[in-house]
Amino acid sequence: MSDGPESLRGKKYPAKKHAQKVLSHLKSKNSSKADNANFFISGEDLVLYKYCDQTRPFRQNRYFYYLSGCNIPGAHVLYKSKQDQLTLYLPNVDKEDIMWSGLPMSKEEASEKYDADEIKYEADIEADLKAVEGIIYTTDINDFNTKFANALTEKDETFFYALDEARAIKDEYEIELMKHAAKITDNCHLAVMSALPIETKETHIHAEFAYHALRQGSKNQAYDPICCSGETCSTLHWVKNDGDITSDKRSVLIDAGAEWECYASDITRCFPVNGDWTKEHLDIYNLVLKMQKEAYKLMKPGANWEDLHLRAHRVLIEGFLELGIFKKEFSVDEIFEAKGSAGFFPHGLGHMLGMDTHDTAGNANYSDPDPLLRYLRIRRKLEPNMVVTNEPGCYFSPFLLEETLNDPVRSKFINKEVLDKYWYIGGVRIEDDVVITEDGYEEYSKITKDPQEISKIVKAGLAKGKEGFHVVV
Ligand SMILES: [Mn+2]
Image (cartoon, rainbow, N blue to C red; front, side, top):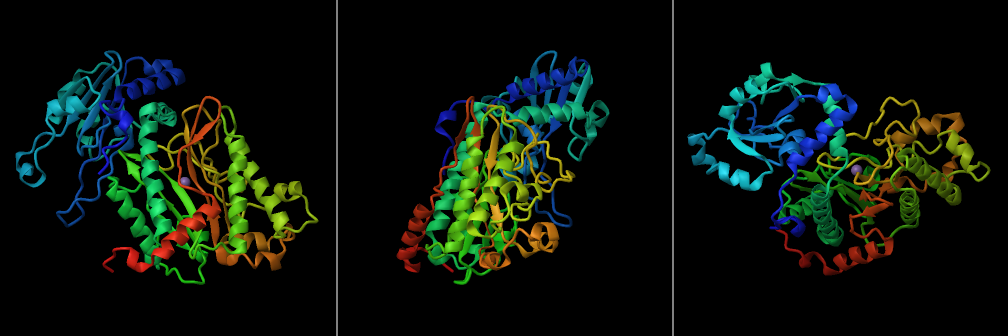
């Protein structure tokens, strides 16, 4: 198992800097609120399933992790701004639990590992909170902090704003974690592309990806893997992953990401099941690749994300005119103004990426009446050290296109006969993970997206045959 990125050896997750950063955002938004402000956040604890003594899968509270770097269930963190002091509270030691769970982390080990000024136990919290001067902000009163509710102020909008803005701009430590998550995911995608002889169901693709992630030490997927073939490629978040990969389903789309120490990766690749791209599949693949490339040309600090997204729509329209899916008598502007591409590229160009796959502070507006912008998850200008995905897509979904095809304005652009040749592909999405730099961007997901190279990888795997893989079933 990997120990994580080499560059982070001996370094601590910068929890205290994060607390200071949250405070400075609070100050810039409302300086009176920041005077004597304190933050208290409780992490998730283990929770049992109903009528059962088994625990639900544990996923740490992201705001808590941001201020602590601690993934232990049942911990809490307090930041006192006046003293600039960060205290991490470990759960009280439950002697009975040691038999089942082993020895808990000691205070000494915790102070070695975490970036906190002091390490205490939960038993100290009540008295400590009573002694705090000023307001103690928390995100919300929940099952894990309800016993301290009297001391806490929940759901303050400015506090949420400060947390979310702080999380939006990553520091070097966070970027290293995310690059490591992406590296694991790159390897998983390569494994999936290489194992076609044993992938006759979408489930097998899911299994192959998850197996290689776990082998590399990533215990959790950042989100449920989306494994599609043929027409299911047109369902944006297809997670049933239960279809057969038959020879008439020529296309595969896999959108999946490993997680590393609570940080996500999110990468999508497409390939032909037998290694040979069909004409239509390759047409659309190259078009989506071009959409991504053109968006990259605009990607730098100060750029408005909407402009990148709308540029990708224009590239799609240009491509459809060349392919004859849109009739040549119409202009790019005409089709763009009439939102003629919305049904083919219904989601946004990308989203903020961080601890959450769709990370904080993207400022989406899901009630935007403009169908080109409604699902755009970033509505702001880019800044250095934001991490985003660049993920254009093009889909042929009867459901998504029903409205377009029944709309006299938008359907007149479409040559139905040409369109009919493309339904079987389902869709293509290409997604990479990117950090915005001082003067541009760095794409740090590395698995190839060159269609010829992908074809070679798939064919090399097929040449190994089923015997080349050790599978029990
Ligand atoms: Mn994504």
